[in-house]
Image 1 (cartoon, rainbow, N blue to C red):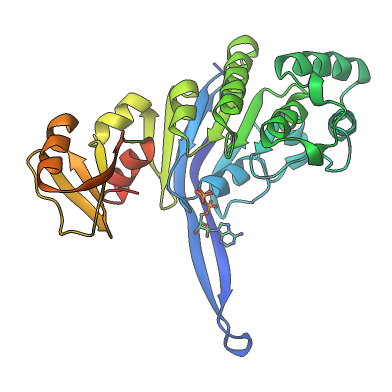
Image 2 (image 1 turned 30 degrees about the horizontal axis):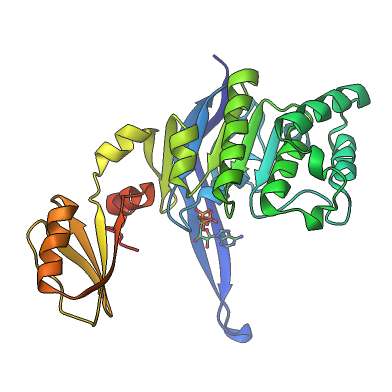
Length: 317
Ligand SMILES: Nc1ncnc2c1ncn2[C@@H]1O[C@H](COP(=O)(O)OP(=O)(O)OP(=O)(O)O)[C@@H](O)[C@H]1O
């Protein structure tokens, strides 16, 4: 098996200047500390963690945009910050919140330009474009200017742009952010095929449990800049089992509800969050007997809850 990514003792500090102009002080923030992991070719790995945990900083070091402050990193055997251009021809990168497409050009022209960026021979490019157009169903909007595309269409266009040079490794930062259910499903289906049929290695950050469940056998959790977990999703769930939460909207603000089988975790005006240790129906019946209820929602624990319980001590948002 060939190694796609190797990171060892990887760290990144940012130096911040703070305060008024004449009394500026410098403060160092360690965004990533001592991260070590290896990804083999053909793996599909999810990177997870709370906001500000250091995921994007880690990804940026892997693709050569940021130079590590410490440690060693190799991607397809290359040191990313040193061989950024060479690496760019071997990997595909999509950052969900930004586009690499030309805003004013029709998608087709924008994709044609990427050929020159990666120096892909014309014949190979045409073949690959036809393949990706079919797989990502780009046909209906190839002539549409990128600025007029929906977010889901734009993401499909960005994926095509990242894959036209047929990279062995695809790095995605939040590939399904802001997409509706249908668009998410199309993107996930495409990534699964890409991995299964071409053996493309995929590393993606996400806040979406669905992405992980559908796509990733392996999960890396980054928290406070450190690698807090490396294993499969089931093992992660088992590390920190989370209760289901009943969100209760009462007719008026009340003291925390006390009923058997539930623990009130949070109160905000007339809304209360009850963590369930018993059957929801029994708890709902009990709450309804003693309180006037306007609305109820049952929340299954998300992977964010699991992570929050592991490292932050509970989440009921
Ligand atoms: N260019 C920068 N200069 C200074 N600090 C930075 C810079 N980039 C990131 N940071 C800080 O590094 C830490 C990690 O940020 P990073 O963007 O890697 O987190 P993240 O896990 O990707 O978060 P999110 O889920 O919100 O995207 C944060 O405290 C952030 O404020």
